[in-house]
Length: 206
Image (cartoon, rainbow, N blue to C red; front, top):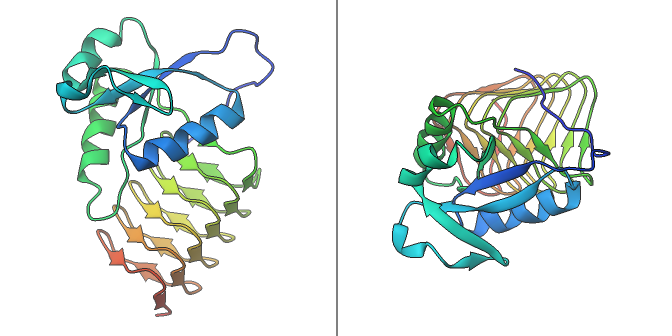
């Protein structure tokens, strides 16, 4: 896993496509605007009937079937589909973008904290006021949502959503495709198995 960050001092910002125009997309737009790392070229939706609409004043410029054609114009793309019930739509679109050779950056809010000793995989977003501590490892295509805490030496595998205010304590392993609900707590040095759904406010201590 490699952290892909961009120099904010460049004069010509690269364009980026956002895949999915729902509520999570709005939150990611807010982060991207604050980072000043990309120009949002437009949004891709699954339903072609949504083409022409806007999300926070950014146009829906195509549907999933247009991604191959658009790769000739755009290098960067990012999955902005939310994840609660299932990670399947995010996984499907992440894999499609990879197969089309898009670059999926790491996007980190400038008002989040990520230790220089942490590692973040491609296509992951770190939202406002999240905190990623030293030795933590975050996989690909993850959502680390607002005010989430990933403590020292914790591992969050691919395609996970650590929701708002959730806490992953030191040394804990969150296996792939898992959802941790808002204000949930994963205790120290435990393992939460793949495809788990942890409800809001729950504490998993062993």
